[in-house]
Amino acid sequence: MTKPRTVKLCLKPLKPLPSGETDFRKLAAMTDEEICARSAGDPHVPEISWSEAGIEIVEPIVKTAVSIRLDSDVLAFFKDAGKGYQTRINQVLRSYMEYQQKKTG
Image (cartoon, rainbow, N blue to C red; front, side):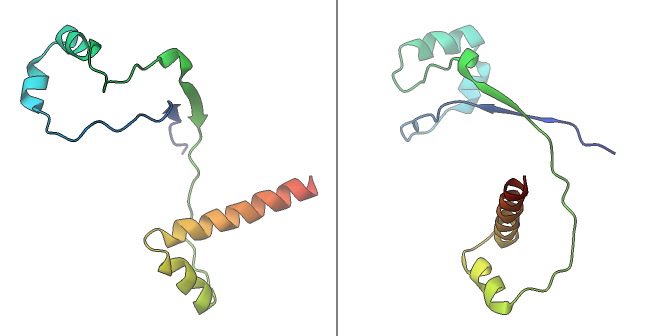
């Protein structure tokens, strides 16, 4: 069974908005035209040009559960860096794999 394709949209990073509270009820009651009119003169609302957005189709990578024996100090090193240690181990293995693939042609 194949997973559906994932579409990733990328824009230039946006500057963070100033801190404050949003009245989401009031915002939900507004029309799109009212929102556009109010945000037109606001210097904190970035201009978004969707024509410049990079669209990349990303195929999901299937993960497989395995049991692996690692040296305790190696495992401790990755765990000490915090949550996501299995992902970091996978990234290191992927980097090595890709390097070997490039090296062998």
